[in-house]
Length: 101
Image (tube, rainbow, N blue to C red):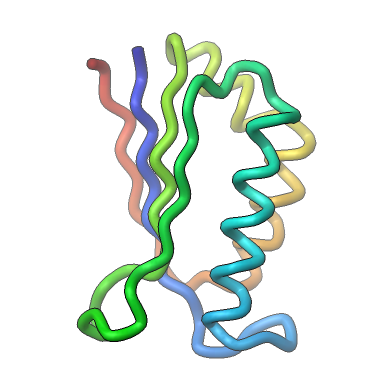
């Protein structure tokens, strides 16, 4: 099993939205992928608490896949690419880890 965890730091404003609004949009769009990409075994998207320290990342994606091939299928899937294109316009930082468990 592969756990794919990604953290995003968002711009204060981007694409005509506030950071908070973009966080909700990203959460909704990522969670919708569960119904579109069968390789996703588990996916949880969390938004950082509004009163948390300013240096924290804003969104955490925690997902699971059977293997690296399934993860790569997810990453290259056209629906994931659409969500990724939006995230790319509103993020200022990204950190990720893919680990076997």
